[in-house]
Length: 266
Image (tube, rainbow, N blue to C red; front, side, top):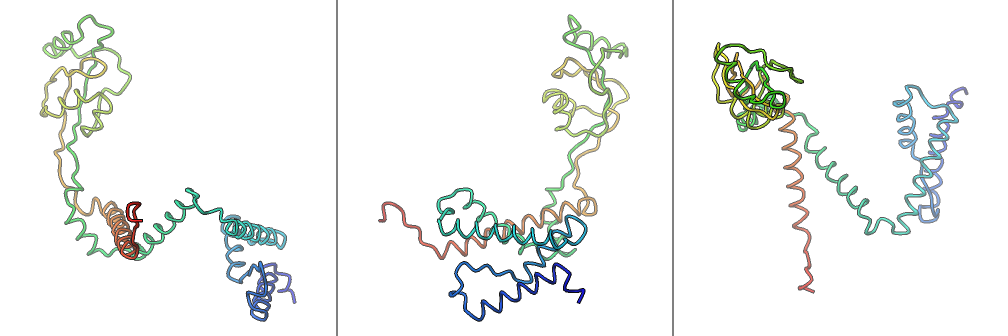
């Protein structure tokens, strides 16, 4: 009879007993009854096991059951007091749960390779890789120099590119216009992206910090990335589209069932 010492077995038997009593007397004759189904007890045990990496002891399982009972009692009493009515947080949470349920159903089945390819072909422009530039620069500080622009111009002509100390890097590889803008400002980014690859220093270009002679070492023109390069992105995008479509369809179906009465129609 060692199996009777297993706390989960004990609670499962107790839960089964409650089902027998409920069936015998009927639900209406047992006010405030809380049914502890075998599935609920197993779920509590499984949740503990997942978190603690071991089964709960008898005392621990008893604590889990009591906490479950407490939550159920509080939930029912809150319902009896109608606390959820006009509660914005509760309303939003319930709407969110229904939305998540709809989305989960829409993405329950993983998309096939054919579906991924079809989505990619339909949305090819979405996977455009932006133009990227690799460049070196030298910095001429507007705060350290009387005329930083003139000094930078002379440096380019004489190929004397020493410049001033700079808090960021002096060389960048394959940066997009947005990345360059975030580092040096919009004006610098716009001008740099118009330059061509050259063995000679060009500029100078004005930034948020001062003036910069630049050397363009390579340019990677914008191009649509191959399906193999963006397959995971395509999968994420397709599933997101499926979620949005499912929610729109579900709402449209529900909306047809309701008639909205506006104030002037009363």
